[in-house]
Image 1 (cartoon, rainbow, N blue to C red):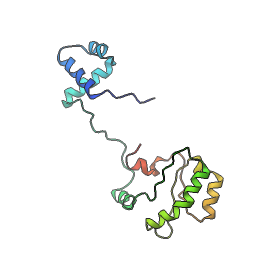
Image 2 (tube, rainbow, N blue to C red):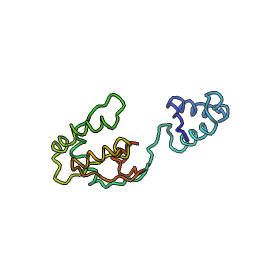
Image 3 (cartoon, rainbow, N blue to C red):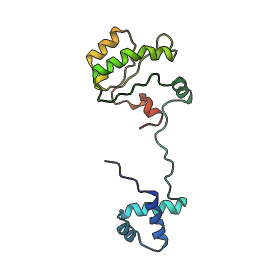
Image 4 (cartoon, helix red, strand yellow):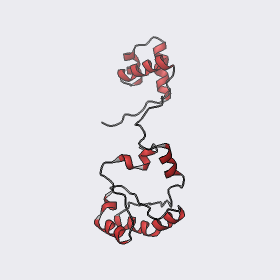
Length: 158
């Protein structure tokens, strides 16, 4: 199911104003081109919280402790490389060959550090795995469909 477009604050305020002026939910919906159920939800929210602002959402519980967050964020991400075109396996390998060890050194990674990337096809290609093996990089095994290991999702990205 696709996400629906959020109504502007101005539209939500107009809904409340029209409701206070005595208009029905159906009439408000027709006038503003908004579904009756959406109008009703906005009015109920306004009656309960006296606001049309977006309220904080709870979201999924964190899968990492505050200590774990500090351990990941204290040194930063390392070298960030801007890629202007569509990346392929050869480009990915080239980026790693020029930046992986310098990043590890700059971050003062201790002996035995483990490299992490996801299951993107360019990361899991046989040639890429072989290159990492030949360079003796330890790679974190990444189960497919596992967002719990994704630092972007851990820190509130998607």
